[in-house]
Structure formats: structure tokens, C-alpha cells
Length: 326
Image (cartoon, rainbow, N blue to C red):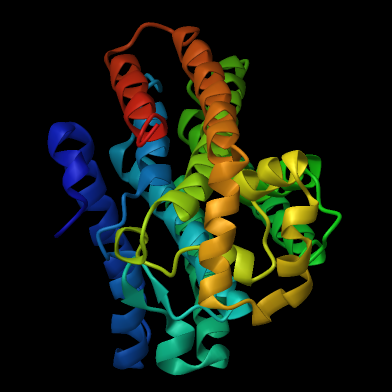
């Protein structure tokens, strides 16, 4: 089963992620074959599967590690992530993701929303079947609540000319950092009686998630459509103002006022102008510095983990992901 080529250098994780994908495929049991195949294509499309990977890595800290249980929790995390992306695509009216046609473009909004809802149910079914601990279900429920609050906060701030960095940080804390934190915490859960390791894992995941989202938003202003797998600067067109543009606006807010006022009617030529303004006013550089700050925090926290063979892998993977294109 195909997974991203980045895992070639991590053979242990590669095998576990293949098993996780097989579990995902086994549990998507819709009778509508066209919708089932489309959902599987999005789940198994060669995405990096970062959140399941961190979940699996932290699970190795458990002295009585159950590989099947760890893979089920990792699969549940990926289902949760993919479900939120499907709902995002409906809200954003997105046509492509990872270079593939979105569910809403292929089947319409109704089926896309129901498909996302279906993945939520599979997520909790997996946890109830394999996790064997009600506390893990509670962890995932609380995590999903925080993620959805983050999404709602983002919707509230769309096309808001008064948006500030603090609003952005609040959004990505709920939207992205929470899922990374949840992945690490759920993997480490039960590894020690006092839960200190799981709490440390949560903090590591939080900082990884913050850095990852900031860098992802930088790529939106520095990469082309083909590399991104979606239209560049699509967030700005959708009224979502991220770190690069917000930092640039701190330097010269008036330069962006007319573009923000146009809302979704901003043209491709105007988006190119915005791209130039963000670079001119140092938005990308400032956002990269912010991502580096969160990365440094994550790596310092990883150093506090007990010695274990996976500790080196956690460090290497985090450096590889978060210093990309910096």
C-alpha cells in the first residue's frame, strides 16, 4: 500500500503506517462504491500522515505496547484529520486538495459533509473497538471539540479587516496545534502511571502543530499551485488572513485595505500584487521566524523525554518537517 516516500528513511514507521492504512481501508465499509473509493482515495492519497506517525512514535514509550491498539488510535487520528479537511473544503468551496479533486467538487456539498460525518463515526468506532479505555474516547472527544471551536473562530474572523496576530494564533491553536497535541498525547497515554510523559507529549505536539501550521501558511505565499496541490493564496481569497499577510499588515496595513475590501472578488492579478506586498513588507521572514521559535520549543521539550530509541527519530522528524524551506 502506497505511503509518502519520506517514510523510506524511517522503515519502522513505514511498516506501521502501512498497517494503519490497511486498518483504515478495512473500516470504510460504505455500500456506495463510488463514494467509498473517493473517501479511500483521500485517506490513502499519499499524504504524509504526520499525526498518526507522531502518535505511533510516542506509543513506543509504553512498556506493554500493543501494536494493534497503537495503530487503531493512529488511524482514528487520521480519520479525525481527514473529516475536518472535508468539511473545510465545503466551507472554502475548494476544488482541489493534494492535487486531487475534493469530495465537494466530485459529489456535491451534501455528500461531502455526510462523508466527513461518516469518518467521525468510524473514528469513534475504531477507538471503542480497539482502545479498550473510555479515557481515550474522552481525549478524542475533547480534542475534537477544541478543533471545531478553532474552525468556528476562523469562520467568525473571515474577511475581517481588523484581524490581528493574536486572533490567528488562537485559531491555529484550536485548528491545527490541538490535533498534533492530541496525536502525541494519545500515543503516550498510559505509558506511565502519573501521566507526566503524556503531558509532556501534549506540549511537544502543541508546539509542533503551531510551527507546522505557520510554515504551511508561509508556503501558501512562497510556492506555486502545483507544489501546494491547491491554488496559491486561496486563503486570502477566502478571507482567511494568516501569519505572512498579518505580519506584513503590521508594517503597512493601508497597503492591504483595498484588497481586503474586495473580499472574494479579488482577482488573480490582485493576488499576485498581494504576494509582492507580503514579500516587500517582510511577512514571510517574520512568519518563518515565528515557526522557528515554536520548532525550537518543541525540540527543547523532546530533549526532556526519557531516553529511548525513538527519541532520536522524534528529533530528526521534527527538524525535517519544521525547518523545510526555511
